[in-house]
Length: 257
Image (tube, rainbow, N blue to C red; front, side, top):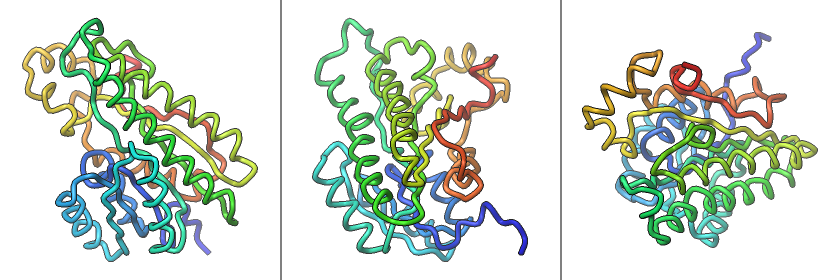
Protein backbone atom coordinates (compact mmCIF):
# COMPACT_ATOMS: atom_id res chain seq x y z
CA UNK A 1 0.00 0.00 0.00
CA UNK A 2 1.31 3.46 -0.89
CA UNK A 3 2.42 5.72 1.94
CA UNK A 4 -0.33 8.32 2.44
CA UNK A 5 0.56 10.22 5.61
CA UNK A 6 -1.45 13.35 4.81
CA UNK A 7 -4.75 11.57 4.17
CA UNK A 8 -7.16 12.74 6.88
CA UNK A 9 -10.05 10.53 5.81
CA UNK A 10 -11.91 9.24 8.86
CA UNK A 11 -10.47 11.85 11.23
CA UNK A 12 -12.61 14.37 13.11
CA UNK A 13 -11.03 17.75 13.79
CA UNK A 14 -12.23 20.63 15.96
CA UNK A 15 -11.15 24.17 15.08
CA UNK A 16 -12.05 27.02 17.42
CA UNK A 17 -12.41 30.33 15.64
CA UNK A 18 -12.98 28.18 12.59
CA UNK A 19 -15.47 30.38 10.81
CA UNK A 20 -13.02 32.92 9.34
CA UNK A 21 -9.38 33.94 9.03
CA UNK A 22 -6.60 31.48 9.83
CA UNK A 23 -9.04 29.05 11.44
CA UNK A 24 -11.15 28.76 8.31
CA UNK A 25 -8.04 28.53 6.13
CA UNK A 26 -6.85 25.56 8.18
CA UNK A 27 -10.29 23.94 8.31
CA UNK A 28 -10.75 24.24 4.55
CA UNK A 29 -7.43 22.52 3.82
CA UNK A 30 -8.15 19.72 6.27
CA UNK A 31 -11.58 19.21 4.74
CA UNK A 32 -9.95 18.90 1.32
CA UNK A 33 -7.62 16.30 2.84
CA UNK A 34 -10.65 14.24 3.85
CA UNK A 35 -11.34 15.24 7.48
CA UNK A 36 -14.72 15.80 9.06
CA UNK A 37 -14.85 19.14 10.88
CA UNK A 38 -16.26 20.72 14.00
CA UNK A 39 -16.02 24.50 13.94
CA UNK A 40 -16.60 26.84 16.85
CA UNK A 41 -17.35 30.52 16.48
CA UNK A 42 -19.34 33.13 18.35
CA UNK A 43 -21.12 34.49 15.25
CA UNK A 44 -23.97 32.33 13.98
CA UNK A 45 -24.04 33.80 10.47
CA UNK A 46 -20.30 33.27 9.95
CA UNK A 47 -20.65 29.74 11.29
CA UNK A 48 -23.36 28.98 8.75
CA UNK A 49 -21.30 30.40 5.87
CA UNK A 50 -18.21 28.42 6.92
CA UNK A 51 -20.26 25.24 7.27
CA UNK A 52 -21.59 25.64 3.72
CA UNK A 53 -18.08 26.24 2.37
CA UNK A 54 -16.60 23.22 4.13
CA UNK A 55 -19.47 20.88 3.26
CA UNK A 56 -18.79 21.56 -0.42
CA UNK A 57 -15.81 19.20 -0.06
CA UNK A 58 -18.18 16.35 0.79
CA UNK A 59 -17.39 16.15 4.50
CA UNK A 60 -19.45 16.08 7.67
CA UNK A 61 -19.36 19.52 9.32
CA UNK A 62 -20.77 20.38 12.75
CA UNK A 63 -20.89 24.10 13.53
CA UNK A 64 -21.39 25.30 17.10
CA UNK A 65 -21.81 28.76 18.58
CA UNK A 66 -19.33 28.61 21.47
CA UNK A 67 -17.76 31.44 23.49
CA UNK A 68 -14.41 29.94 24.49
CA UNK A 69 -13.97 32.46 27.32
CA UNK A 70 -16.81 30.63 29.12
CA UNK A 71 -15.64 27.46 30.84
CA UNK A 72 -19.11 25.93 30.86
CA UNK A 73 -19.66 26.75 27.20
CA UNK A 74 -16.44 24.92 26.29
CA UNK A 75 -17.24 21.92 28.48
CA UNK A 76 -20.76 21.62 27.09
CA UNK A 77 -19.69 22.36 23.51
CA UNK A 78 -16.96 19.73 23.54
CA UNK A 79 -19.28 17.09 24.95
CA UNK A 80 -21.89 17.93 22.33
CA UNK A 81 -19.29 17.70 19.55
CA UNK A 82 -18.14 14.26 20.72
CA UNK A 83 -21.73 13.04 20.86
CA UNK A 84 -22.50 14.38 17.40
CA UNK A 85 -19.31 13.23 15.67
CA UNK A 86 -18.32 10.17 17.71
CA UNK A 87 -14.86 11.38 18.69
CA UNK A 88 -12.33 14.21 18.20
CA UNK A 89 -8.90 13.28 16.80
CA UNK A 90 -7.32 16.75 16.65
CA UNK A 91 -8.09 20.10 18.25
CA UNK A 92 -6.90 23.44 16.93
CA UNK A 93 -7.29 26.06 19.68
CA UNK A 94 -7.26 29.01 17.33
CA UNK A 95 -9.91 31.45 18.60
CA UNK A 96 -8.44 34.78 19.65
CA UNK A 97 -8.90 38.53 19.87
CA UNK A 98 -6.52 41.44 19.38
CA UNK A 99 -5.74 43.77 22.20
CA UNK A 100 -3.72 46.81 21.15
CA UNK A 101 -6.38 49.35 20.12
CA UNK A 102 -3.42 51.67 19.47
CA UNK A 103 -2.99 52.44 23.18
CA UNK A 104 0.32 52.63 24.97
CA UNK A 105 1.06 50.13 27.72
CA UNK A 106 0.56 52.81 30.36
CA UNK A 107 -2.91 53.63 29.04
CA UNK A 108 -4.21 50.07 28.73
CA UNK A 109 -7.39 49.66 30.83
CA UNK A 110 -7.64 46.64 33.09
CA UNK A 111 -10.87 45.58 31.38
CA UNK A 112 -9.05 45.34 28.02
CA UNK A 113 -6.33 43.23 29.62
CA UNK A 114 -8.90 40.88 31.18
CA UNK A 115 -10.87 40.61 27.92
CA UNK A 116 -7.82 39.52 25.95
CA UNK A 117 -6.78 37.01 28.61
CA UNK A 118 -10.27 35.54 28.84
CA UNK A 119 -10.32 34.55 25.17
CA UNK A 120 -6.66 34.07 24.23
CA UNK A 121 -5.49 32.28 27.35
CA UNK A 122 -8.48 31.04 29.37
CA UNK A 123 -10.20 29.91 26.18
CA UNK A 124 -7.16 27.92 25.07
CA UNK A 125 -6.79 26.39 28.53
CA UNK A 126 -10.44 25.28 28.67
CA UNK A 127 -10.31 23.90 25.12
CA UNK A 128 -7.05 21.98 25.52
CA UNK A 129 -8.10 20.63 28.91
CA UNK A 130 -11.34 19.16 27.51
CA UNK A 131 -9.46 17.76 24.54
CA UNK A 132 -6.82 16.25 26.80
CA UNK A 133 -9.48 14.57 28.93
CA UNK A 134 -11.10 13.08 25.84
CA UNK A 135 -7.93 11.96 24.06
CA UNK A 136 -6.28 10.47 27.16
CA UNK A 137 -9.23 8.16 27.76
CA UNK A 138 -9.33 6.50 24.36
CA UNK A 139 -7.02 4.57 22.08
CA UNK A 140 -5.18 6.48 19.39
CA UNK A 141 -4.32 9.63 21.33
CA UNK A 142 -4.57 12.77 19.25
CA UNK A 143 -3.07 16.08 18.25
CA UNK A 144 -3.38 19.39 20.11
CA UNK A 145 -2.49 22.58 18.26
CA UNK A 146 -2.69 26.16 19.53
CA UNK A 147 -2.35 29.33 17.49
CA UNK A 148 0.13 31.63 19.22
CA UNK A 149 1.87 34.56 17.46
CA UNK A 150 5.24 36.10 16.71
CA UNK A 151 4.24 38.57 19.42
CA UNK A 152 5.10 35.78 21.87
CA UNK A 153 8.80 35.87 20.96
CA UNK A 154 9.33 39.43 19.70
CA UNK A 155 8.77 42.80 21.37
CA UNK A 156 5.17 43.81 20.66
CA UNK A 157 4.88 47.47 21.63
CA UNK A 158 1.37 48.61 22.58
CA UNK A 159 0.30 44.99 22.66
CA UNK A 160 1.52 43.66 26.00
CA UNK A 161 -1.70 41.86 26.94
CA UNK A 162 -1.88 40.06 23.61
CA UNK A 163 1.81 39.16 23.71
CA UNK A 164 1.49 37.83 27.25
CA UNK A 165 -1.32 35.47 26.27
CA UNK A 166 0.54 34.13 23.25
CA UNK A 167 3.74 33.55 25.23
CA UNK A 168 1.71 31.68 27.85
CA UNK A 169 0.08 29.54 25.16
CA UNK A 170 3.50 28.32 24.02
CA UNK A 171 4.38 27.31 27.58
CA UNK A 172 1.02 25.60 28.00
CA UNK A 173 1.51 23.60 24.81
CA UNK A 174 4.99 22.47 25.88
CA UNK A 175 3.61 21.29 29.21
CA UNK A 176 0.84 19.38 27.43
CA UNK A 177 3.39 17.78 25.11
CA UNK A 178 5.29 16.35 28.08
CA UNK A 179 2.38 15.29 30.28
CA UNK A 180 0.13 13.84 27.58
CA UNK A 181 2.75 11.99 25.53
CA UNK A 182 2.12 8.80 27.52
CA UNK A 183 -1.42 8.81 26.10
CA UNK A 184 -0.27 9.21 22.53
CA UNK A 185 -1.21 12.88 22.49
CA UNK A 186 1.15 15.36 20.86
CA UNK A 187 0.98 19.15 21.22
CA UNK A 188 2.42 21.95 19.09
CA UNK A 189 2.04 25.70 18.64
CA UNK A 190 1.77 27.68 15.40
CA UNK A 191 3.20 31.21 15.36
CA UNK A 192 1.74 33.34 12.54
CA UNK A 193 3.47 36.49 11.35
CA UNK A 194 1.73 39.33 9.52
CA UNK A 195 -1.40 37.71 8.13
CA UNK A 196 -4.22 39.48 6.25
CA UNK A 197 -7.22 38.85 8.51
CA UNK A 198 -9.87 40.97 10.23
CA UNK A 199 -7.54 41.31 13.22
CA UNK A 200 -4.90 43.10 11.14
CA UNK A 201 -7.33 45.25 9.11
CA UNK A 202 -6.06 48.52 10.59
CA UNK A 203 -2.44 47.68 9.75
CA UNK A 204 -3.40 46.65 6.21
CA UNK A 205 -4.90 50.09 5.65
CA UNK A 206 -1.98 51.98 7.23
CA UNK A 207 0.40 53.43 4.62
CA UNK A 208 3.24 53.85 7.13
CA UNK A 209 2.97 50.21 8.12
CA UNK A 210 3.00 49.13 4.49
CA UNK A 211 6.14 51.18 3.81
CA UNK A 212 8.10 50.25 6.92
CA UNK A 213 7.06 46.72 7.90
CA UNK A 214 6.12 44.80 4.77
CA UNK A 215 9.55 45.34 3.15
CA UNK A 216 10.97 43.39 6.12
CA UNK A 217 8.99 40.31 5.08
CA UNK A 218 11.28 38.33 2.75
CA UNK A 219 8.22 36.90 0.98
CA UNK A 220 7.25 40.52 0.16
CA UNK A 221 3.57 40.06 0.86
CA UNK A 222 0.99 39.63 3.58
CA UNK A 223 0.35 36.08 4.62
CA UNK A 224 -3.07 34.64 3.79
CA UNK A 225 -5.26 32.22 5.79
CA UNK A 226 -4.70 29.63 3.06
CA UNK A 227 -0.97 29.67 3.89
CA UNK A 228 -1.80 27.71 7.06
CA UNK A 229 -3.48 24.83 5.29
CA UNK A 230 -0.32 22.79 4.86
CA UNK A 231 0.86 23.02 8.44
CA UNK A 232 -2.65 22.20 9.69
CA UNK A 233 -2.92 19.07 7.55
CA UNK A 234 0.56 17.99 8.66
CA UNK A 235 -0.14 18.44 12.38
CA UNK A 236 -3.48 16.62 12.15
CA UNK A 237 -2.03 13.78 10.11
CA UNK A 238 -0.01 10.68 10.90
CA UNK A 239 2.99 12.38 9.29
CA UNK A 240 3.50 14.31 12.54
CA UNK A 241 3.00 11.39 14.93
CA UNK A 242 6.47 11.87 16.51
CA UNK A 243 6.48 15.69 16.36
CA UNK A 244 5.55 17.32 19.66
CA UNK A 245 6.39 20.27 21.87
CA UNK A 246 7.38 22.48 18.95
CA UNK A 247 6.71 26.08 17.93
CA UNK A 248 6.26 26.36 14.17
CA UNK A 249 6.72 29.86 12.74
CA UNK A 250 4.70 30.70 9.62
CA UNK A 251 5.70 34.23 8.70
CA UNK A 252 7.25 34.39 5.22
CA UNK A 253 10.71 34.66 6.80
CA UNK A 254 9.97 37.82 8.81
CA UNK A 255 11.43 36.65 12.13
CA UNK A 256 14.83 35.73 10.70
CA UNK A 257 15.35 38.78 8.46
